[in-house]
Length: 47
Image (cartoon, rainbow, N blue to C red; front, side, top):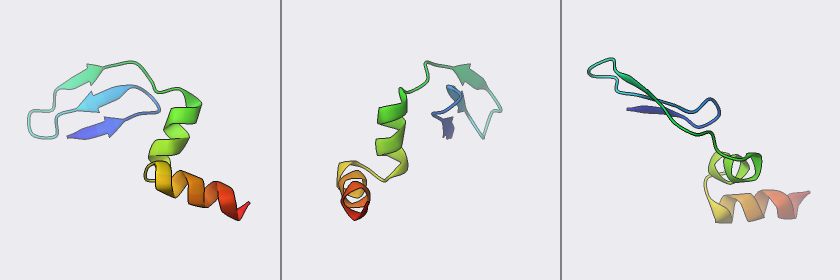
């Protein structure tokens, strides 16, 4: 399974099926990309 949060696409790598979903808001996407709340807070603290 591959989830593209930016473009709102979920792909089943086994069957090749693709599903469209809502994209994440930018502030939530930043949390996910940082590895969660702890990673996000550590990143913000360094700035």
